Image (cartoon, rainbow, N blue to C red; front, side, top):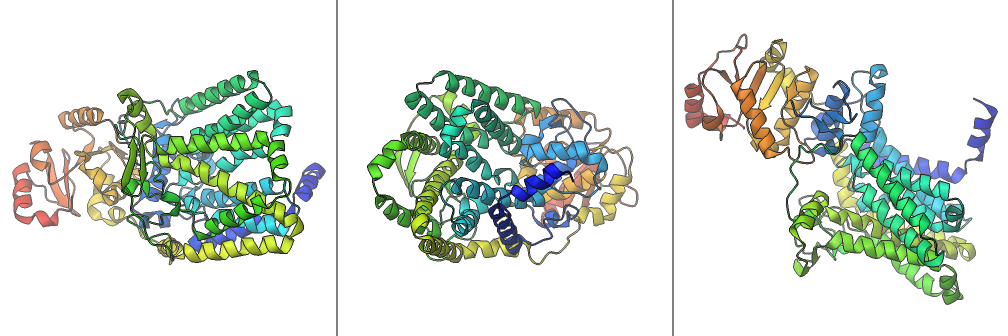
Length: 579
């Protein structure tokens, strides 16, 4: 280790080390240590939800030969190329580890380490902002830890790994609180926001417009108070170029998925969301507050603040109006106030339109032109943009309280401790559900890898492709994940998987017709609902593990059935077929 590196390590403020350790401990208490182990992949097989999707997506992507753009692969959508961006597997991290794959062990996962890294960065970036406003390091440590208890953050952990890096919102907010420095150093400003959108695309595309909303606030203040219009135009252009180039590099423009259709706002922000602890169909977030009505269950996505946050905002509001010479200080900070206000109002508009709801009532339904609504449906879960609102309000409240800590250090720390205690007590029902989902840890092997039939199928060197004959399989993640795990273990492709968007219906149908017309190298899964329509004559059929399986090849050790035999079996013993 060089002397320069040693000096840099020594120069790191101990606050960052302490908040990092606290955030790791909090993570371990909820989820355990086993999920952090990159060699432990067994725990994914117990979760037939998005976390299983992410691991299996990475597993398939890893073992697929490189294509260009580098994010494309077809192992789970053969023969169609799709982007790793549509598997919520943190595409940039997946691509990085694919480069390193030759030196990695066969069983390797980054999703657990990525989650704990997000906990650390969430608290560290909060501390970095607050240290500009107070030298009360105990206060900074406590408040930084408090930011890891937000439901909007905790909800995403091990549900949507690509949506876990809320630190990106804090990363984009930081220049607003040090705006003079970044204005005087435009290169650093460009680097900061170009990296923000690069990281945003490399994790989840939603973060790129979130960071853009924050950047908009900064640029409006630059134009209004600095009378500088060149910088905003250049930065907008740079931001757009980096965003476009990163999406293109990861293959995000491959037109193989259905647009989710019209219905923008289906997952928008309900105006009671910050106070509504409902979390359909899961455990309510609050131990103290009653669930409130909602317009659509898609609006319930962990937007609840928690009682601790309410206390923080309330106390900070009182402290704000007690600031000496408040008008003069606001006037002196018009740049920051304007930037935050523009970002907050923009986020509010974007997260609510076109359907503005309060509880189960529609206050306003804005009828957008079809073309705009169709495009907006790409970001149908626009309620997520309300994260910007939450972090602006919470970081502002923390800064106001930080100013109080200059003269009332113990009082400020006591307030934060109160907020933490109330917050954890309030959200303990949901934390208990999270905890129980990962404890006790028990390895559950993939059932198809324990089945003699499926092992015999895999041993047949002629079989290279597994084909779902119906999109009905999308309704049962367990089927998807069991088969995907078995297929990826044996270098067998799939024609469909649980992506964040459905494969284009016509494309899926065309590919299926090609497979059925030329079944060489294929094994088919037919649903009992569509068996009579899709099952062709001439294949060997087997009913195994509740599945209807067809192939031109015979499976050694198992008696084949004819098409009519299968239909008769379904008619008489349909309950024995699970799909």
